Length: 332
Image 1 (cartoon, rainbow, N blue to C red):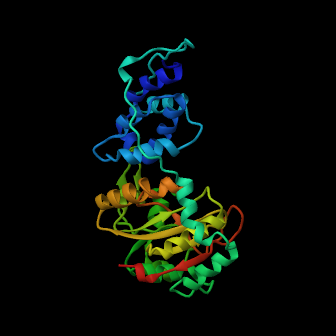
Image 2: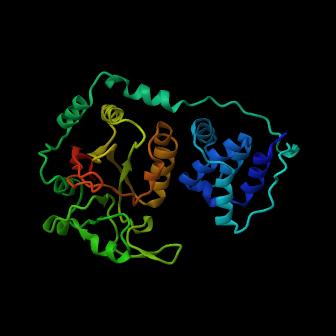
Image 3: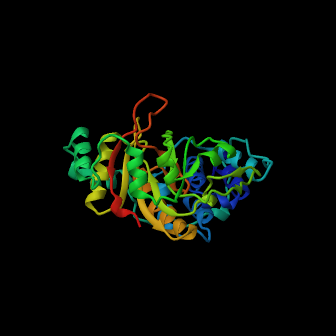
């Protein structure tokens, strides 16, 4: 027996574009909405399986751990975007029996992301934030002086001819083109904006779905070197502890930058050969199957993601974005 929201959710789901199952941000939102509507897990699993994603264990873990306030209105929004019009929905307030979706439950071990994260940072549970920042400073293979920090990053992690965007993420096409320069030019004429895009770009435009040109979209990435990691929802102390623990495990961290507010931006050296390897290695394995379950921001997984520029002043609070750790040894 199913209530109106559950019945309507199962009516709406087939009208949502299947491409949403391949977009992690949309997929997570739809997962939460379906769960809040009371839809059986098997319906979500069946919808989630695409040629690109086949990991049922990971789908189950997301269903068990994701939480939020999305519900039937969210599904209606996606249907309007992808289908154009809404079907007639049930408003009876009665429960409706839908026999064809009576599927057996399969038992999958529950993954507790909070418990796993706590276990990772446990070796540093007695450290203060100051202690951990000092430890990162001491571990940094490149001695950070607090001056010309972005120049340090450019000289250490890039080649002179690499084309990098330094500017606002909201820049239009003309501004994007103006802000893309070679590392050599950025060093010669410093312009330390709040954001930069860590992966080198082609410098050539591509047309987006809305027929607007872009110089900084995923299709504009030339070299797939660095993934951006960020834990916006965890206290800074825990973020420091996590990155210390990851260094202990040998994770190839290229740089760590304090955002000037509530997070640390990590540049992780992934050195993928192309977009296909990025999708498999970074989006699927690293983020979807590991980091997102620990609370890492899944929106960071795309190859053209922006990161905070070390040494710049954050406009919202006038706090300097500080470089905490730099390792030129991870550059290929």
